[in-house]
Image (cartoon, rainbow, N blue to C red; front, side, top):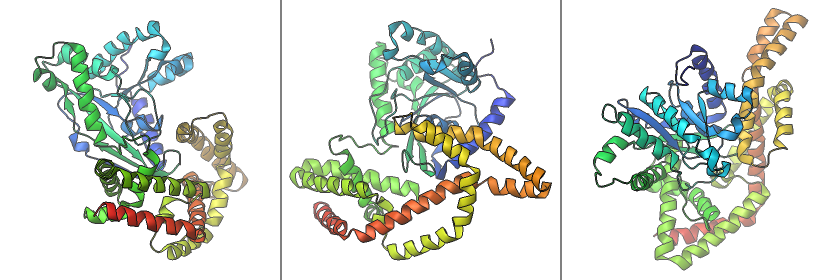
Length: 439
């Protein structure tokens, strides 16, 4: 049986298409600090897990190299799925909830993983073990460390083993064509780590220290809000204080990394204020929570709240709406099979975290078929020139459709923010109290 890491031309051809469609699912995509990825050893990627399939796809697209992933074993049960996932270089891994008998099967998977790493093919694990659409980090599972330690025992003398933390931040967890920021953290040289801690003869102690180290390094490249009780209020304040924080930190521009840095600084500031001024800070968080609930109930986006010249912005969006409406109608019609199928399947899914993955998979499979069939139809009815024109018009239509829907949403949000003046007063009080606390 061929090794899962064996190079195949059809895999790389498909990967190019998968990567293109994945990046097209976001309006703004930024990968940072890829130069930190070691070139001299075996690499295990470890990222946070907030957005189901989109998280491993973000790691897959980090460079052109093939990568081997693990996924929950229950999705591999059907033979056709097993064959397809194997082609995608995915391995089944069992969890505690699958029973101890099934958990024992992971020994074989670990051996395959070590063989993959020995051939210098990156191995990817989402060590939280399950997804959660929150800006935080759950307790890391032990599997990633067992594989790293086994690989180090097998070939660590000849080639170092690294765990590379990756932080993935989405502008919106559930919204298609949002933004995505992927940051590579400081790698852990497992081989060096073990040699520097000869006193750690017990594997469980090695795992415990490695888990603490990886957790700390992952938290540096994600927005980690440790306070579950005040989670929503803290996130609201981090966003409301974003512009001022960027000025305070002398971060020029509204880039994804600047927004991330400002929000992370504010989250840390609020955690500190809860210690130094607990009563005042808790009162502020209560006001932020109330503001957040009212804002979301009215459908007002944070971008509307943060705009300084909202009337000018609204006027510009209205012009774009008028100009783009004809192509939007065309886009809505030609991509309707994708939209209808997604609308139907999404009713069967309770967890919204799967929505982007579902929409991505449907577009991945159906868009090429649609463009081919509709272009052929245009050629048969009119001519090959019209078929070519139709194909060129179709290509960006699916992404334009979602961008235009987002434009409509932001116009509605801007109008609602202008109307609800009571929220403006609440915002001014929140800003005043926050400025007093941070003086």
